[in-house]
Length: 495
Image 1 (cartoon, one colour):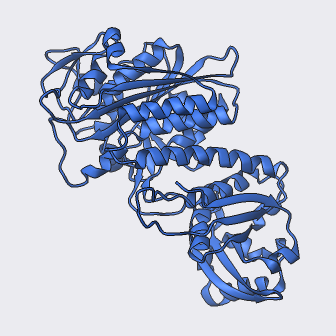
Image 2 (cartoon, helix red, strand yellow; image 1 turned 90 degrees about the horizontal axis):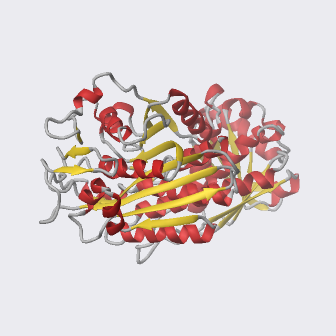
Image 3 (cartoon, rainbow, N blue to C red; image 1 turned 135 degrees about the horizontal axis):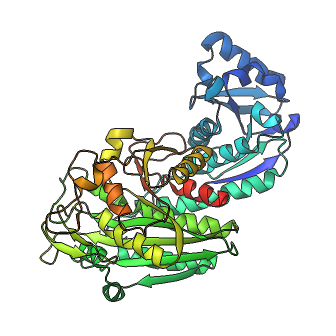
């Protein structure tokens, strides 16, 4: 993607408002009533009062954008009111959403220099709001137009955020580092399947490792064969592109235990012999979003130099139908030694993750968190803005949920129902990879957990409903959202 925005911190000055090409005012209902907390030209106060008198407080609704031209001493200034909600709605994430909408309004009006201000940022202890606003501006500016021969030209915009937050420059730098990682994940998952395959994804992992000074290894099919990793090999055997397992290691936590992030990297999922319907199959280029999230989280963790020990494992394969593809009814053996009856070749993500979480334990992981576009069932249960968690450790699940709340990503823990293991029993192997439609998200997660070493805390993150957005909204673009990347980074900060 092209970087279309730069963000910096500044101190509020009346003359800067008057000279500005555009001013974005972030207002919740209560902030609109306390607009005098900002040192604005009188005309700006009048504009807010006029909006309240003629339109009510609708212009402060979350995500609402109201744009107008205002005459000032130096000509005309575009003023944009970006709504943040009312009362308890006025959260950092609603500010993030508002900022995403506001930056696109700036681009639409070809603004090159803008000021952002909010009564919220006149309080020194609101650093988390400053971070959220910065992230919203940066992430809302994202677009993937690499393959457009005549991509829409947008002016680059520089936004100065007025605030009194101590250490503001450091907060902006950290937000930019996190957003660069999210850009990376979005770019990878938006690549088409004829460009992104297991080899190119593994190569991208190696390039990232080199750039950020991470230890790295890539397992070839031959090396996986020697390790007995028959599950991922079975998924990849129908493609001309052989499977890969890329492993990155970040060691800056002294004697702290290692946490493993494990990502599903199915670069295209046709469903294999159990082929998917043609409608919407093109979206299956994003079935490697879990691996993209892990890779990009490792990038940010290294760039932020967090004092932690983390292993990133990406299980990369392409699930294709061919004469060499695995079949329903096949029995395969995973690296752990368990045998698996392949009930459905479209339940392939859990197969590659079975070997990947097992390998993460071999690499010394004391905790394992896997992330995957695993099921469509999760969106039936939780919708398109909340992702699911299946875990053998409630405390770990709670830590992930709290990390998600801080970065604006919603998670909900689903229970491991008593009958889940029974549903996965096979008459001819140790376990089968599909238990049918009932409790599909739960049984998919439980299957993966069977391959994590006993006694190791584990959580499975199902982003099947949140990895892709059907339309641009707030800081989330149409296409890959990279949901989960920010949560993994934030979770690592808590270790």
